[in-house]
Image (cartoon, rainbow, N blue to C red):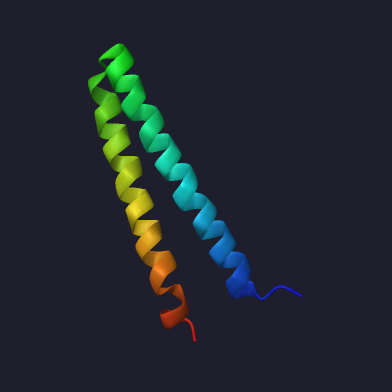
Amino acid sequence: MMRLLTAHKILIGTAVVFFLFFALWESRGYYQRDDGWAVFRAALYFLVAIGFGIYFKNLSRWYK
């Protein structure tokens, strides 16, 4: 039986990977289309991925 914390870690880890992927996707879009908003979206997705990564790293310490 999976603990709720383990399931939460799996979901947060998946979110980190997806947001990093979206950040790279938007970065590529900027270089291909020269879309200024793509840089903003890429930076936003990257910051969200960092935030989720920090949350993931500290999750075990916060919920003992």
